[in-house]
Image 1 (cartoon, rainbow, N blue to C red):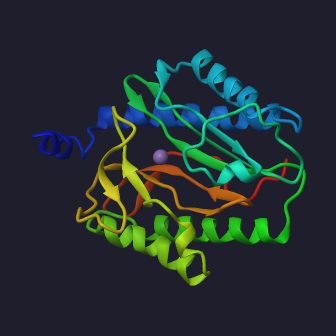
Image 2 (cartoon, rainbow, N blue to C red):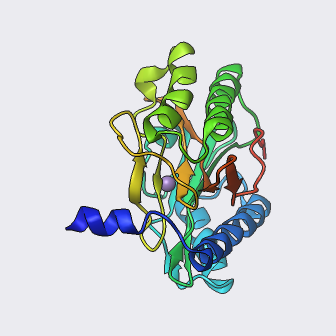
Length: 237
Ligand SMILES: [Mn+2]
C-alpha cells in the first residue's frame, strides 16, 4: 500500500517541479549567503542557525530536514548534527540543508575548505566531484537507478575509496525529503521523465574528513535539468 502510494508520486507534475525549483533556488541563494558569513572561529551550530534564519527569512515554510553542518573529522558523519565544535582553518566543512517551499523540499550539499586544503583533501574532493559529474552525465529517462549509482561508485571504487562511499547515490524528493526511487546498489527502479532526484556521492575517511556534493535534478528524456546551480569546484574560504 505504502509503496504503491510512493510510486504513483515519483513522476512530478509541472506544478510540483515548479515548487521543487523554488525550494532549490532558495538553497542556492542560501549557499551564496552563507559563504559570505562563514569565518574560522564560528561554531557549527552558529553556521547552521544562520542557514536556517536565511531560509525562513526568504520564504521557507519549514526545513526539509535537520540542517547538517559538520567540520573537520566530523565531516565524515553523513548525517551529523551541528555541535559547538569550532570551525578551524585547514578543515573541510560540509553543509547539507533544504527548505520546504509551497509544500516541496529542497536538498543540496556542498563541502568547502576553510583557509586551506591539503593535497589529500583536494584529491578526495576531485574524486567525489568526478563521480558526481559522471552520474549527471549518464542520468536520463530509461537509465536504471542501479546504473546511475554504479557510474559514480565505479569511479570511487577505482580510486580506491569504494568502502568509504557508505550510502546510495541519491533519492527521489518531493513533499518528503526521501521518496522513491532510491538510487543505490540494490535499486531495481528505472528513471523516468519528470522524476525529481538527488545526486550525492560522498567519500568519508574516518578520523580525517568527508566530502559530499549533492545536487537536485529533474530527469528528462535527454539528461537532467539541474536545479542546484551553486559552484562545485572546490571553494577555499
Ligand atoms: Mn539528500
